[in-house]
Each structure stands twice: as C-alpha cells, then as structure tokens.
Image (cartoon, rainbow, N blue to C red; front, side):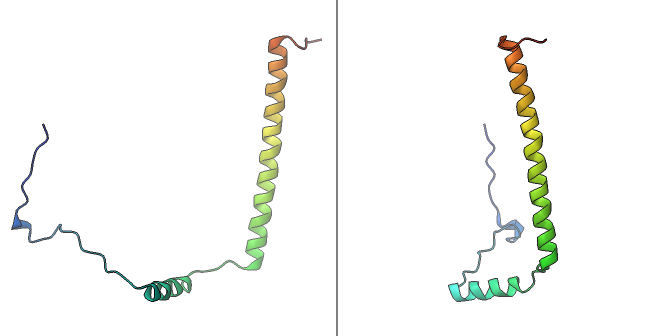
Length: 86
C-alpha cells in the first residue's frame, strides 16, 4: 500500500511551486526579438560548406544502402534456388 505523507507548514514553502508570470503577446514577441539578437548566425561560407557536407553524406549513405540491398537480394535469390552458383 502506498504511503500517505501529510504536508506540514514546517518547510516554510521552500518546495512550493512558483506560479509562472503570464505575458501578453506583445511582450512575448519582444522577448523573442531580444533572444534572436543573441544568436550567432553562420556565415554564407559556413552554410554552403555544411550544405555540401550533408549532400555528400546523403550520397555515401545512399550508395551504402544500395550495396547492402543488392547483397541481400542476391543472397535471397541464392537461398530460394532461383539462381545457382556457377
């Protein structure tokens, strides 16, 4: 059976959750702009280089999975006897 603990006022509210302050939409967008100014944006060169690296990795991954698919297809063909080893 689960233990039931009684809350006492001996903790002086140290663990009591603090209610979040509600903000207006205008204040929210002000905060968003203020935080966006803190962001360090990459340069055009960094963006271009990162994009090319992503394309290269996608190409390598595509070749790898095509090779694995071909090997599995060939193995399955041998397994079911549709092709014999010469």
